[in-house]
Amino acid sequence: MDTLPSEGQTASINGIEIYCEVRGKGEPLVFLSGFTGLGTDWDFIFKDPVEGFQLVLPDARGHGRSTNPSGVFTFRQSAMDVIGLLDHLGIGRFKAIGLSGGGGTLLHIATGQPDRVDAMVLVSTAPYFPEQARAIMRQATVENHTDDEWALMRRRHRHGDDQIQALWQQAHGFADSYSDMNFTPPYLSTITARTLIVSGDRDPLYPASLALEMYTSIPRSYLWIVPNGGHGPIFGDASPRFVETALAFLRSEWQ
Image (cartoon, rainbow, N blue to C red; front, side):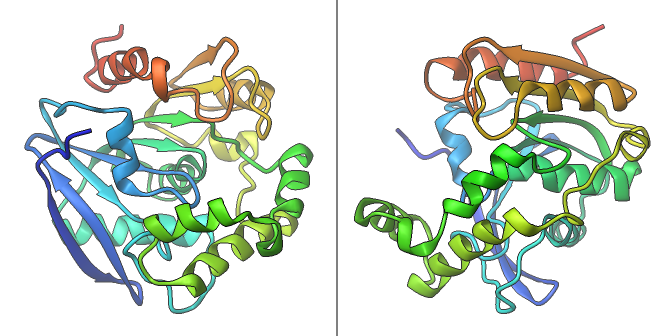
């Protein structure tokens, strides 16, 4: 896959060095990846330049090239990092796509600073961690990861094994976290952004019922349940339809 033209940069935000790539010109469109994902993972979905948008693709704190000296990760803090980065880039109101944990970060932004988000796409996002997700998180210890998983993570995260261990420990800790991701229907009702919610009907982490819960709670929302779709049902053969649908939504081509 060819690398799209980009401008990589690092900024000092909230006590970390956050890496991001900025591409193209137009309306700001922020791509937020899931936990342990990278900004450039979106190249597997958006394989061509996105006309009319300036893309902002950050690595979350402690991910990829970004640092995290505290060793602590919350989606609330991740949202503050994104806001700080956008302020640094001189970006006010923006549109965004968030996958899984990136969607959790977006929920914090859209509820904490609703005027900043014009429209957003939430993919495989949950308002809280259901028990089936927590059960998987409890099994995700550092010791349970294979040599192949270590090799993959070492290629993606640039600050050594301590960084990788911290990410896996944080993911394991989500199983006992109840205050960070806790978006009740009244809280979701404060979101003003146009919102497209995308969920696979075979997601092992977040059942489609949670997507429906968000749909009934967020005022200007639309719901897309992907048949036979798992967690992140937008990769591979599914990516062209997702790109077409998401961009049409973000460009306000829906009535």
